[in-house]
Length: 296
Image 1 (cartoon, rainbow, N blue to C red):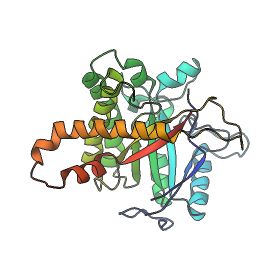
Image 2 (spheres, rainbow, N blue to C red; image 1 turned 90 degrees about the horizontal axis):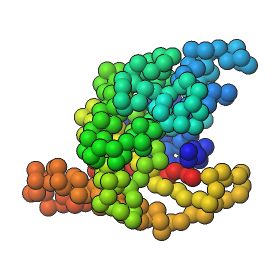
Image 3 (cartoon, rainbow, N blue to C red; image 1 turned 90 degrees about the vertical axis):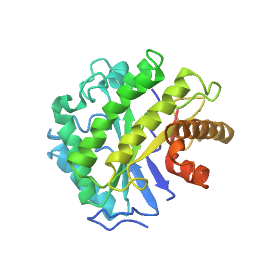
Image 4 (cartoon, helix red, strand yellow; image 1 turned 180 degrees about the vertical axis):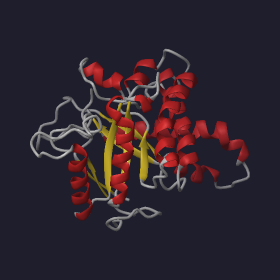
């Protein structure tokens, strides 16, 4: 399993006021991967209502204090992975946390993780923090090739869509900046027309349709993000040890993504917009929203 993103990232995109979320969002992002002390990134929502043995506080109250501190110190974005049970149990068969995967209903996930996710997003919004919610799905990775790209993408996007509708429509949140479509899932540069790549293409398109449908400001928030595969000789990067940055490989990945998305959106939407003389430039800026690096 690949490692997390870097713990702290400054996103090049003026901070939002403490205690509020306003649209359009800030032009400068200061973001962090978040989980509370002693409750890891995949356990936080599962442990949400438990009392931490050291602090004597509930995990949700610990999170509330941390979010307040982040906002007061100039942060305006928190990144959170949403793991399905399949991926977590591939690493530890006894792991109890994670959301029910795309073969079922995530709202039935154990320990009320569904409602706890909404509580987390609500608290972040109350402190003027935007969120990036990044899906990590073992179901998706296991099913690529098991069915047609369109059928696999449709089932997975339907699962993701439940989160989008729940947070953006049912609970009317305005602070979901980005939906990370799938952890550790990038198109194959060496085989851009193969099953893996065409599944990636269809997954992105299908999720983007739902993200735009339920976004409070389409094209501004509720964007769709994707990984870049950050290759490294070791899966463990020691502090201050550095790593090899293969910018040419990343450029090839980005080019492949751009080509696949151009093809997908022309196929589905181009015929309705042929009269737009600037279609190509507008089109790419719209669909290729955010690329999120992933370390290995």
